[in-house]
Length: 149
Image (cartoon, rainbow, N blue to C red; front, side):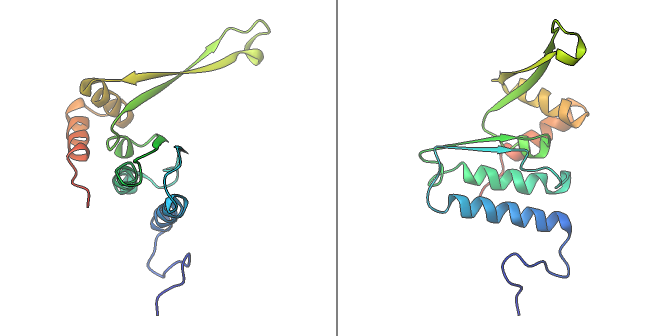
């Protein structure tokens, strides 16, 4: 017998369960057509680097026709394995302004910088990895050239 939807199997790991839940939730939410804008904030939290590429691949598939014909998917991630699958990148930069009331009243602002060139995108992936650009370039190129089913 197969387990019921949402039931965990004996061999499933917590990360695999989370990945399956993410895929199910996204598929259910998009099954009636694409929303104009789908914002996924840290969807990949708690899954770890091992599942980053499969989640990135899934997100990329969501961004391809017919689902994304009339919409846009925006993903906030800290996993370079997920970021490598994106068609466009923005870097979020937070800064605190010196508030008049001291440290407790400092205002934090967030700005978004477009990373237009491949060099910029690979540089950001390298920074996210904390590794050399050559490693980031290999990961980035592998994800960008991934053939989706």
